[in-house]
Image (cartoon, rainbow, N blue to C red; front, top):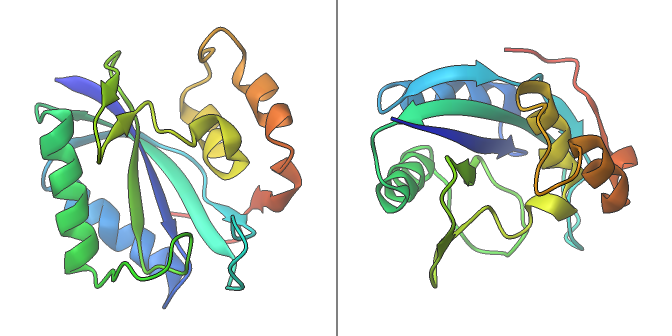
Length: 159
């Protein structure tokens, strides 16, 4: 079993229900170990859209990284995600942040996640359940380096 960290995000429909529903689907395929608080975040990128709800969970899985990506994309599709606009609105977004100690570099999968250290909306919830240092720095240092931590706050909604 590999301890893996996944990011969850939603800003279409009823985002809290989308996060909860994705958790149910994920629990059918892997063991959910821990989950962060839920954060509301301003959208990342230049696309005008609603704020997101974001969270990070840790799971244990016996899937390979590629198999896990396939499962995540199948859940997104099942929930109605349509990929149209990069950094656009979405009913659900599921990303692999860390996959044990593995480093994966391929055309369609990069682990650790390529944007991990640039996104406070991922690092802040990650710090709830993964307080250890990342890549030689405390997570709080990485958060301050993003320059976008003011765009993330604790949501009123919870699990």
